[in-house]
Image (cartoon, rainbow, N blue to C red; front, side, top):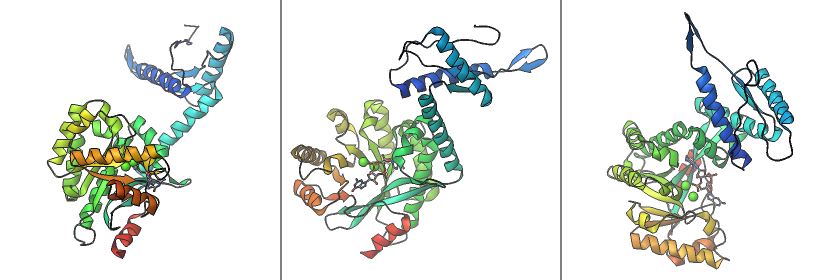
Length: 354
Ligand code: C2E
Ligand code: CA
Ligand code: CA
């Protein structure tokens, strides 16, 4: 306690990476805010506390104790000015990083409320160029920034847990689409592949959520494919297998996305009830010039064959790439060669054209 209502807290073992350190600091601060916020009794009155926190990060230069305290104090005054119960960093770069993340998180919450999310669909084709299914890809139509790529917001959505409501919306929208296609001959056989993030899949209620969406929309479960990634395979494999089996029993199928980029153990892989392996676009990009990529594609195709799985290549942009993949034994493709991801009306027009 420095004096009166001022306290100093020292966090000596933070991550060397500034972004990670920022997260650690925010986590500790969050706990303190939560603890102080708890109401308590003074005689007949219930009271609670707020706090303003200023953070100065040290260890880079030769700062003196007095300097550090001065910086923390300045940051603390900024926190006070910004309204109580908040935290400010002295370091402008860190503050900018934190502010950008907070702004993005707030904007995502608004996007959920204001229904700014849309699904685009990218065709998946066979050797004859026929569309056999689509992958649903999330788009955010931001009122000022226009279309925002999922690569920009999915990572933060995962960290903040916002991926749960967003992912559920994606599932629901895809299931509705499947149901509405059921009565149309040209569309009723199409599968929709939905990307599922680790955090979403790891929820205890995941299986129930998917089944509830299928039930409430009336979608045929055989038309729904879930795309999982290798990075999910590192933990809780038994639970993962159990969830997959439960959904498979209803007809839902599974594809392993970005295959080859992680390091999943083949022993695990064999035990997963998968239907499809997706060759990552990173291996397709230079497949015409890079012998290593050819070797990897050949390996994935052989593996898929031996496990009785379908193999699909993503990021196929040229006919030459497609021919090479076909010669290696891969007969399903997704990529700009056929179409980029498009809104639903365009997708339906593409299917009905042939
Ligand atoms: P992904 O699942 O690997 O999706 C494939 C990405 O490659 C898509 O980017 C797609 O637009 C792009 N792509 C397709 N064909 C080609 C091609 O021929 N060449 C090139 N260069 N790129 C191609 P997008 O739509 O920006 O999505 C990025 C990532 O965001 C996805 O990667 C996926 O991991 C994630 N994502 C998208 N939608 C969802 C969603 O609904 N839920 C979750 N959890 N993640 C999603
Ligand atoms: Ca995918
Ligand atoms: Ca992928």
